[in-house]
Picture (cartoon, helix red, strand yellow):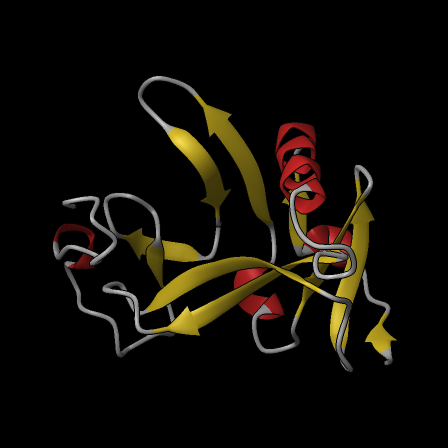
Length: 139
């Protein structure tokens, strides 16, 4: 499996707090099933795209891979341009809890941040930030 060696650090940053939570969650998975954190975008969110975070057994051909704080993060070549400069953090508070992605490429997003629109995404609704994302967040 060939991975693409690129300046990935300009694509995604995983905070230390997020990396610690990812490692904790990986440890709960069956041996060999959670070797890398896969970050991707998918079509279909109320704002045009939605984020996908999940574990994978390893990188695939043409993935961009990077080790951050002891976690191997992989991104497919389609998703990489949309995630350039994004930061993944983990919040553990009363008001907000869970993984949070700050994406400088997003020009609009739903209220809970599960989906987003980029400038060249003409398919997304103009006022998607109030449309409701279907994730149960009510925004």
